[in-house]
Image (cartoon, rainbow, N blue to C red; front, side, top):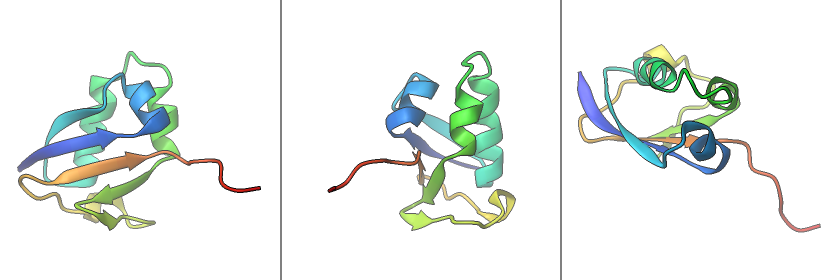
Length: 88
């Protein structure tokens, strides 16, 4: 089991009620399941999380099964909700 940090950005940060928190998990799926349990009382958290993209130690997870994405000790999971904007 690895320990590291989950960082939430934008709408994910608002839904979690925190900018970051520690994880103790072997895979991304385990870390996200634990986060869902921790934030079960926050109505929007699971909805926002379902729309997010993830970076693990700077690498895009993309469409990979979260259970197949290992986490490293001292690593970082970035939780990135969809962003809007740009030049018109």
